[in-house]
Length: 329
Image 1: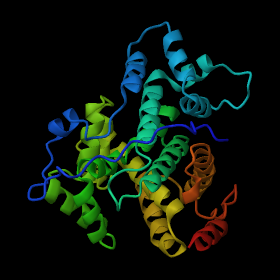
Image 2: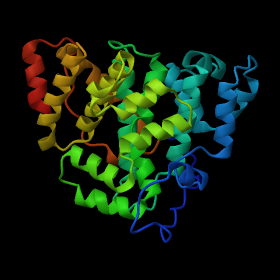
Image 3: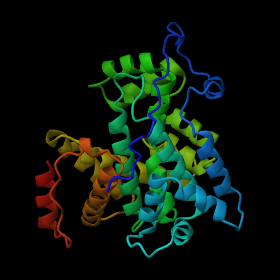
């Protein structure tokens, strides 16, 4: 199902002629005020404000949602609606206005940033991976319910937004940095981002989420998602671990066959820290994989879909689990 507007206007790449060369340190407030960081359009901001108003009359909000085929599809899909006889009002009630606000924001950003000025930043892959993380976080709700299912989906969806933030803020130098760090460990990129910009992709993501008022626990978890042990409280640490696992699952979906062995091992290690049985985890990976492919097809992100991995058996025995791991390697 194709629900994106074929006449949509993609965001024009930001000009890079005025980008600093000697000093790339980022002033977040300055760039945000200049419109050089990802953010909602005026229409989406108004929709988000309606979501946050607490008004019992949802008619104006439903009218706005119905005007966006992508948002209506996403809301109904997240609510589990698949028939024509279900109502948009029921879908909104099922998803909740907070998650609906985040969903509207994410789809707006997707529409604006399918391409951009950062030559070595793969915008399409960024969004494909974002929806992979979202589907993984949603599927994990069955075993690790840290938030309602639609909210957990949206937490995964926006957890990697800091990468896009750096690509928008410093398109030329970030492209160069991505080239130089292409084969380096993740920690190297993180360190060099912080040194060059004063922000890593993690701290940029946390700053963007705070600016959109999506909650301190969430923004702090995004900041710590690559090192959850650094979180200062249990709730943040648990959410950071969940995002770390969702990230690993997303990487597994997009990985080349030779890259999968280490990712499977990382996945098992993180799931053990969350006290999640590996056989249960493999079932979650299958469910999320199927949902991710459906989202990618609907949102025109399917060009990056790798060949489907073999599905794990519904009832995983230790032998079946070993066979599955061997297959994805």
